[in-house]
Length: 176
Image 1 (cartoon, rainbow, N blue to C red):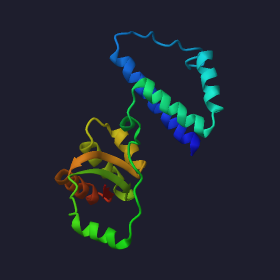
Image 2: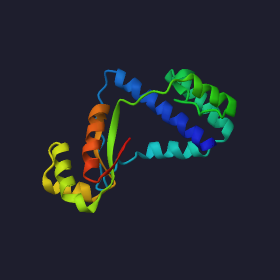
Image 3: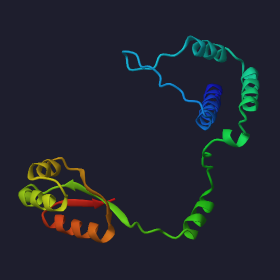
Image 4: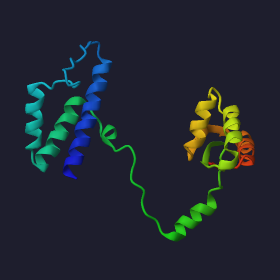
């Protein structure tokens, strides 16, 4: 837990430093990349990292306060992005479910779950017509690789039409 908090603090401080650099007029040269595809780390940075790893919990808290002050980072910048949800009792959950109206989805993903082998050829032709830019070979591979997504983010009306059309050819379709 201690190391996680330390990492978060260092990452936030690093983010604030990067933001202050982006606001300044200075230009920074792009880092060089070695043969392994990684950016070499300077010995100065490695020694600082070693020193930070040796700090106690109290010293880490003090370091965080000093860096916040020197870099002008407020506590608001250091706040976590989202809090963990709190467990509630069953009564509260039921009341919240009743109070919130059920939202109806407007867009769906069309998923081919399974096919009927006897009408496979007709289904392949139907998929070819439905999916734009796909050829017959691509449609065949798609049908044979069921379960798979046929189309994504389709309006409700069009998704229902596609589902009924493919179901006529023995396909089991799920709208997600």
